[in-house]
Length: 313
Image (cartoon, rainbow, N blue to C red):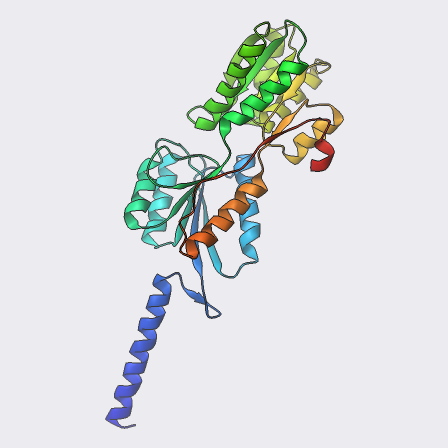
């Protein structure tokens, strides 16, 4: 091989390396098509609804070879999630998706992604600051829908309990505010016996309901900020033979909750569609890849009762 040929080979190898490096910087190449590298920082895989959104999104991208997604689980630990976002930034992800472990304290992670020029999507829960695209529901509407149902369904001078979501989250606060404020305007005769948190957890919801059963001889309604707590409350009432005539409301319209609405165990739930949220995230990332600047996407909610639950079974 002549010196001229050797030099030509070296130049060719260098060019191949440069092209490959450029492709990696853009997200990589697969089958000649550009691959979008996504870092998905989930708040807590143990949370039923957040895991459902994550898994639904995973199913959407599994069949799309133009996506390469790395999932992480913060297990509800804020510092872990901030570290995971930092790692995604170091890895030069094309897009970062985060379900915030804390809506206010996640802001430094959002701002770090902004500084790095990486688009970031806040899913299910809003970020308290920085620039992110929000995909989820308008939280206060769920509480309003629960109240509108209870205003009509509760007996005169009813006594109810309210089971809050996890403290520190705007969806917990807004669902509670939407329910209590709306109810008070139309039904001042209704007494709220207790108003405590069960942290969106089914077991905690069951335990709190057991305590309330002991404390209150009359409970006409149990309003819960999600379905898992509502199902836990229903289980406690059934075990105590106190479920008859008690109106129980949840949020999320999970499969099990809808089954209980159909059987009469739950009075109603509010549809917060995990598939629609996940699909919205998927479509938003495709818009970002196409060079668009997507806006927030608010997913509509609606009440699920005995009258319409058959469509969701």
